[in-house]
Amino acid sequence: MKTTIPVGPYHPLIEEPELFRVVVEGERVVDIDWRTSYMHRGIEKIAESKTYDQVTFLVERICGICSTSHPIAFCNAVEDLAGIQIPDRAKYIRTIVAELERIHSHLLWLGLAGHYIGYHTVWMWSWRYRELVCDLFERISGNRQSYAMIKPGGVRQDIKPSEYRGIVAALDELEPKINMFIGAILDDPVILARLKGVGKMSREDAMQRCTVGPVARSAGVDIDIRRDFPYAAYNSVDWKVITQADGDVFSMAVVRLLECLEAVKIVRQCIDQIPEGELVTEIAEVPVGEGIGVEEAPRGECFHYIRSDGTNHPYRLKVRAPTFANLPSFRSRFIGERVADIMIILASIDPCYCCTNRVMRMDDGTSVRALDEKSLLELSWQRTRELDAHYVHRPRRLLEL
Amino acid sequence: MDPVKALQVRFPRGIGDILERSASRVYVGIDASIIKDIADFLFNNLGARLIIMSALETRAGMEVLYHFTFDRLGRIVTLRAVLPMPKPSIDSITPIIDGAEYTEREIMDLFGIEFVGHPNPTRFLLGDDWPEGVYPYRKEFHGQYPYRTEEETAAMRDEILGKGAK
Image 1 (spheres, one colour):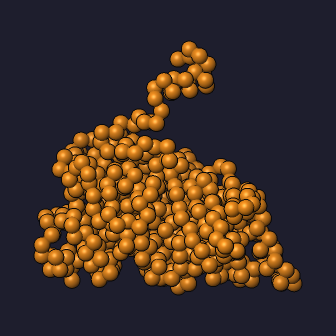
Image 2: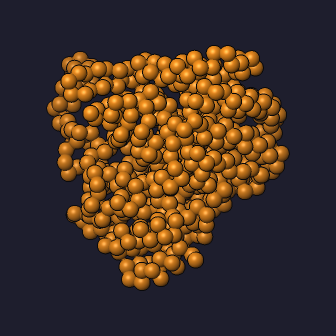
Image 3: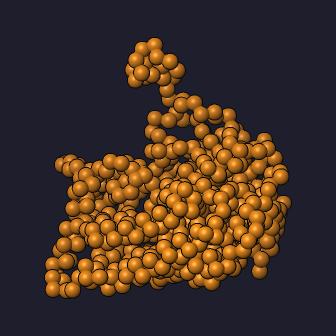
């Protein structure tokens, strides 16, 4: 018998309201539909009444975690429209900010993923080391989040040479910890049993559903905006695109962890190579026309399209956040999975929406059962404990370290 | 072969003006009636990825933009179809590209463009109490909440702030 489980209208995990209608048969999921925009802010419409400089601040508010990705994508679009090049120093500063943000965003995801499968040590530890990056941002920009570093034509603030040493020191502390996570998580048999083969998506599905970012790369689709459409200073530093073949939740964790290491590598090179010079190329006039800006956010490709009528505000701004492109992949991921795995698969694409209350109702026509966040988490943790029981005598590597 | 050249060869009729703004950005005007064939050709034969679709209102009518990308070539090809008002309508490309399902429903809600042949043309972004025929991203819409009259808003304000409060 088919049963529809509405997950939402508040997301049971992260912080934004939307509704998933999961159709299950017994323990297994057979279909999923998605409804969103319970908190539609009309940012694209608001942007039509603001100047280009103001819109940079506006789009920074689209996302609280990857808060520098949207301004960079927007400024890329304005610069494409105006046909200007930004100064070299600004390129390097943009790269440093974007990569540091990638580290803290991926560590945030890792912590949440740990929490949802009942590994609270992973949660506490990864968020502890994420603090290093947030503190670093406070020193560089004055803010832990929403740094307001980017403006059309360059950057709003400099990173002073006296701050380089602090950045390198923080990276020196962070790098062994990321390596520790990689060792501890990739070797843990219970994490392996919970994540390996769960929420699988094939390469063909990933391409057919137009997924982006770590979600696509974990399924073997070799795309990365930083390499394919080089912006900022990515073509002046040495780094590689991380891909995995399996397309399951485990591969996504691997991609994100290894990307943290790449990000550390990129920031180090930027600190070494960063040239002296101007911070901004002034944009005298925005011409009539259109511009497209793309950026690789921690969650995938961020896309901005601007149509200009020659005034100081956009005639139309179109924003595509990476999660919008990745959510359709749920249809491939959920079919055939267990209800207890819903939690971790929903979290696996690192969705970016905000929510406060979490409710889930099961309704099979005769009986109505309400499941709140606690019961959902309990279902997930229960499964980890069952698996854990098989490995009672194994050494707990994470605790030893 | 360059994807735009390939398009011109495959569709000698139906391809309009081509605007090459830079090496990585091309805008191609197309005839709205052959969008399904073009999308099929770009996606299945040339291996493009659909980034997103967007729409905007101009004097000529409703523009629908299909942003395709060739990641390997570092090239974004934007197809532009202009649909006449007041009833803009175009064939849905969701049967060809699964990834277009939600963006077409989004445009349907916000701009009132009909996508003929969409497998699930139901409301996606707007609330269930949003009236039919009001499209918030069209230029004529100025941000009123059409489902609440001024009297109702005033009554709500009185209830929250106390009667007579400014």
